[in-house]
Length: 369
Image (cartoon, rainbow, N blue to C red; front, side):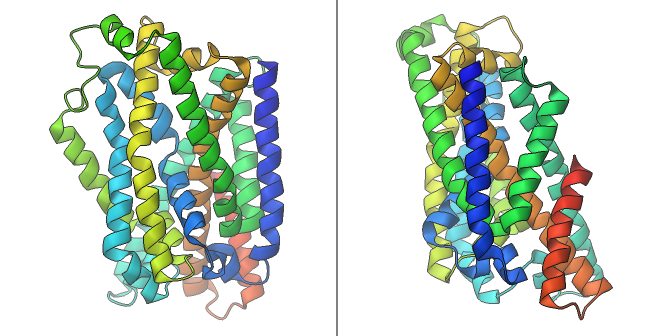
């Protein structure tokens, strides 16, 4: 456990190092801070959308559901990937060409003031609710896997320090560059843990024979069901076309083709990782058949080699961090751009607008905590 704690601490240090490096690029203007100066490259767009999508629900949540219904739970993350691909093909070009900063700003070009206000309220409420869940997820991960170090409360506080800290320091540059580390870590950690877990369980055939026969654990469709899978796809395609945190990533691209490529490549990267996470849940079902799904995955991870367990722990927390930072930044952008600048101080200069946006990151972060 001591090794696991050191790995997580190293991960946190690296995040803040990246954030302070990103601070130099994000300073100078509000556009640099909230949209990375519209200079994000294809790799940064790719890791940003993967980082946002492959969070706690797409990894831990999928594994927990797979503990109950099997591999078909992996379709949740695959649905995210399909949504990102549709976004890249269908509307990323249109959003980028509009040269907007927020969804309500776009609504203001086509609808009256009431419609814009409704858009602002809905977007902020949605994102703050999801943001609040990230603190619970982050605290739960640290508490479940390192109970002698973190309680749920201290785990949430540690999550808050990281979420608010790296977002307020470097804005979109910080979030996107940190996702280079986050995405690499989560994919390496989850894939390695799954491979080792399969070996320890005796291989896929042994796993299948050890599972209860009354649940279609190894079926890619039967557990969740075709209707449930279609529902996920419909919901997550529309989410990708309309949620501020997702649109803001595409708006930060340096040009239209960069936005399109980033979303399509990111979507393709998401397609298999849900099933890898689901397989972790199935392995947990074999190794710990009589515990709650929420406890089975942590127990499975901590049965691994200490170094691999530490990497996997950091990977699961990285999934939470990457989602939270994008949500927090986009919520602050909605406040500063669509509430403060539109209704409070329309003549605000760029320097003060940047200060307001950074302050909104801190205030909204503490509010959701």
